[in-house]
Length: 398
Ligand SMILES: [Zn+2]
Image: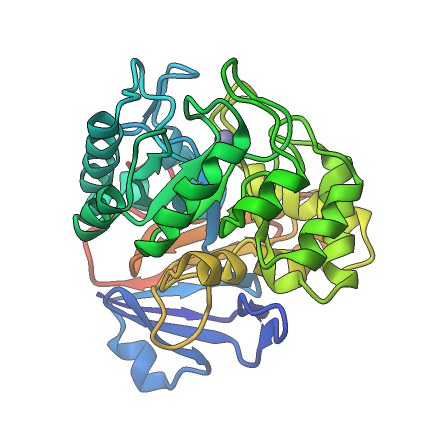
């Protein structure tokens, strides 16, 4: 399918160092972005679907790098079906598993945790609930896992490993496990802060610096924060990615952003939700954290949109997260919410309002155009101006 998005007011690239692209159009061919900027009349005529954005802002689809997926579009923790599809209506087009730790009766032995990770990776490899891409299969680090185990599951398609819920005696016992997982080429992630569920212990700066995982999961606390003094240590003394989550401590979210900015480490600052958990299902969680950060710091809103898109893509090695030719065609149209005081999406976010969503495209397919079922209505009205495909683009269609 070829899709043309025209009449854009602003294009946010996903690259915080160069957050805006010139032009007013994006062309999509199949699952990839063909061009960003301007579109010829011929190219628009050739499109199967033409979306008139009415001056809205285009951003890359949000990448939530901390989602507690299990199997199917179901969360056992909150006993809810369809949450991933609902997150698409919050602008999240990619969910990265924070390990399948919520699977009821989850295994804890070496063969069991390997099998769980492989099965989860397979179950989401070709299935997109509501259009959502799910990167699943994060092996839970348990004592007894060895380098050959990580090599085996990496070869089978697993890309992620998670420290924090294993039956270790001390969190320092994760050090050799993380080292072996890294050596096998897995992206390693680690719970940070006070324990979130019985059985997991506090992990602070000392543990992170010894382990040196690729990502500090919810460095702001999940939900309980580590000592304030540890933030600067982790930023200055490591290369660890700094993941802040909606379901954490807001004060330390802001602290972490300021410390990252002050030490020229914003490349490593990434946004996620850490849901569904005890904190609930939060389809608009990414939008809330972007708005909190933009409105409560002196940094611009586009910088935090990039932290929720391009920065996550870079840390996790994804082909999405940027509006640029060749990247995955995951595109979200946002706007000022109807009835608010601000004129544009970015002004609304800076003001502390969440952006309203007027359309979501994933893998080159418009999932809905018009109104999200979860955000307020947009001030401007995006519409399908021309279509040669049999698809209802309204939000209630699927
Ligand atoms: Zn979590």
